[in-house]
Structures are given as C-alpha cells and as structure tokens.
Length: 368
Image (cartoon, rainbow, N blue to C red; front, side, top):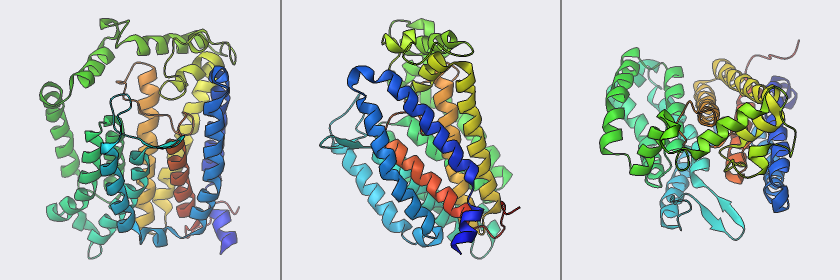
C-alpha cells in the first residue's frame, strides 16, 4: 500500500513547492540582512516544523481526516471569534500573539473550511449527484462558508475572504453546479460591486481601489507602494540587479518587501528570468492540483483538491497582480515565497492534502 502511495504521489507539485520556498528564502536573505536575518530564520524554522506535519498528513487517509471536519470547523469558528478581541495590528484584528510567536487563524481556516465544505457537498449528493443544484441543498452547503467568511470580513481581511469565495467556486464547478447558478452569481457580483463601493466599503478600501485605477492620484501616499513596486520590477530588467543590490529593495523604498511586495524584490534583484519562473512554477502547481481533482478516487478528494487549487490560484493572481499594478492591493501573501509562519504552514498542509489525495488515486500515473 505504501509503495503504491509513493508511486502515485504527484512529485512535480512537491518539486515546484521546494523551488518556490528556495526562491523565497534567497530573497529573504537579501532583504533581512539589516535585521540579523530574523525573518529568514523564522521562515526556515516554520518550514522545518511543517515537514513532519506534511508527512503525517500524507500517511493518514484524507477520508479519515474528514471525519473530524465538524470538530475542526468548530475550533476554527472559536479562533476567529477570539481573535476579534486581540490588539489590532495595522488596523486589523487578525493575529494571536503568544510570546514571540504569532499566528493568523484565518490562514488555518482555509484548511478547515475547504474540508468541511467538501464534506457538506458530498453529504448533499448521497442520493443523487445533481442534488447540489436543488436550492435548499445548495444553501445548506454555502452556510458552511458564511460564518467564517463573515468573521474574517469583520477583522477586516478582505483579501483572505475573497480567497474563500474562489475556492468555493472551484469546488462547486467540480461538483457539477448548474450553469444557471454560475450566470446568476456573475450577474449578482456585477450589480453588487458598485453598491459595495459606494455604500459598504470603508474609506481605506475605497482609497485602495481608487489608487489601483490611478496610482498618481496620491503618489506620496496611498499610491506610493504600487509605484515603487512597478519601478522595482522594471529596474530588474532581464537578469536583475543582483542579490542585495536592488536599489528600491535595499534602500527601503519598497515596503513591505518581505511579505506583500516580495515578488517586486525578486523582480528587481533576480530579474525577469526568475520572476517568470515563479509564475511558471505556480501554473504547474495549479494545473497539477486540478489534475488531482480529476483523477481522485472519490468526490471528496476531488472537491478538496479543487478548493486547494482555487486558494493557490487566487493568491498567485492577486499578489503578483497587485505588485504590477493590475489588481488592487489587498495584503495577500505569495504562497511559499512571502514571509509568514501561519501562511507557510497552512500552504504546506494544503500541499500535504494534495499529495495525500494523489497518492490514493486508483490509477498509477507515474509507474511507466
């Protein structure tokens, strides 16, 4: 059984992840020298801690893990409620601080919600797979999403909240959601966006959208980061200015360069070659995740894999898009590359689930 799992595991995913982590650590080495490489050291420690966790997840059948979905979901809700009473950081109550260790419950919520939502959909389809298109059944499944996303919006953390919606959309499409619901959702979003902008969004969120549309509205204020980011990426040209040699990065014009704008630092110091390679690695990872969703041995595995693909797709597009000025800035990290223990561990666990599902496929894909 173990040999079959090893043969079936999607090794290209693991290779892509290791390359992304390596590139991220190289850039963290470059930008954290003035801080005694503190962020780099913490990132390496979080990665080392994640390794046995990922191995453990691969070894345990995901169907067994799914049996604890209700418990995991309950813990997630408690953590998301509790974090609302913590001290705000940069205007958001998103972090628990325990000594020198900080963690973001909304990151771990991604794992629990994807598993819980997948279980809910599988349960709704026991009699007939088309039952997901019954309004009441669909509503019951979506209720799994409403509470955690609502709590995350209240933090506020709009970027992470959107990631949940993309993951949910991917799961529902794989589950066979009728096109009428998809078209209705698109129309509803088109109508809701201007209403949200004028009547719901706080002033700082509106400012981000305005600056996205025209960064020169406030070049020394709200538009500063995106202008410096675009300048950094352009300065890197084809082969980059070299590690520790990026002008925007090393002189502190690019901020925050270890998290939100680490892709800009990579573009400046490593150039177009490495920046493009990062995108290629993500594309391979997402395509392989979708492949796992198509070849899973059961619906539960397919839905979990699709949800994970949605998470990585959104984070890649949003983070890289905002650094290039083609999407609004939301503070979404770049998976495996940006500094952040909660993000790194969560993403490693999601990869562990993908490898878990791929290892238990009925078809041996890499035996020839």
